[in-house]
Length: 404
Ligand code: ARG
Image (cartoon, rainbow, N blue to C red; front, side, top):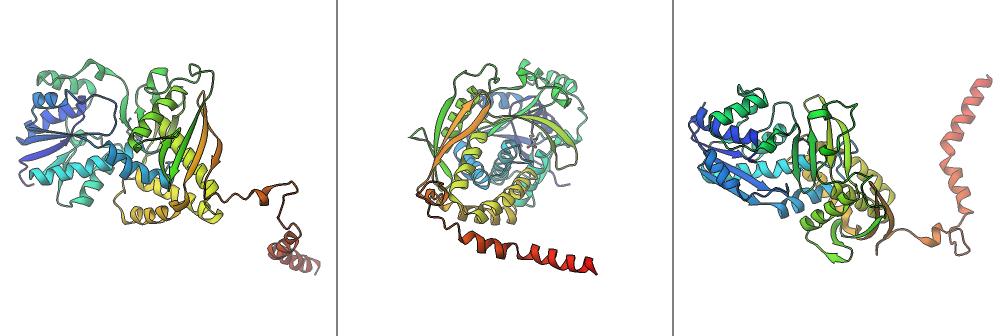
């Protein structure tokens, strides 16, 4: 094992990463540099530098990556329609790739031999961090204290923190494990570990319950340009601000609550609750525009791609050649995905009520049952004659055989 002199730690300032900071420093006698990204976790990062330094960090990085996160990670996943197991929009997963990329960048810049993270040995996040870091720098050493240290419970971590004068907050007594960014919140542990229990109201951070949501629906109109959401109710927004805005509007109308028993990569099933108002609204609106503007074969094939894409993201393979190749396909499909979608948000439901596009493939004259109809109904007869030929052949030949 090479001597480790400097470590870059992915740091949130919570109990786990605070204790990890002190523990790494003690164990490796190394210099610890913390790295924190603002991905829209909704917490102020103002006092974080002081907290990290007080816990023993030699240098502190805090970077606002909301734009990069929305444009380079959320947007491709949105265009691809990536929703894991039909429900989870992948907020936590997408965030890990960007954090890992920056851990490696800072480590290289600071000539640190190792990076460290606070993921447990049971989850998907360790995989996303480590596969990404090694894909970007195969030599980097990765330390995952939660997998190897002797602190096996929360209580022991708190005791360790107290013994080492690590500043921790009372709010860290929460029974839940939470991760939040622009694209959504993931919540697990506590009573949620029983899949037969309904989530308590306190498990939700940014959505009101349907019961308390307004009694009148909220209508919104979203405009897309080549698959990218660009306007809300006629006003231009940067993607990150548009997402923040939709989280508020959707959250107020109880839109975006997801309760899911999911299949983790490492083989266990876990129950997690997500809140992702903007992700739910945007995925729904985007797909609706594709229904209008993509031809049938492309639309159907894209659904297969979407599922595969979601698995790549969930399973930590963002920097895989396959994901990059699929992006090529997806971008090609988005050329004509421009237009507007109107949605109705009401007590937890999110319904598309209208859509239009300059590239709409909907032909009223073909669809109508009025006298404007231009569809040649007589031609259908010949079509069915040929289309049904294989079935008729089977029927005829088998009947002939049965008679013998
Ligand atoms: N299950 C989700 C995933 O694998 C979220 C993981 C993090 N969850 C949490 N509550 N800290 O992407």
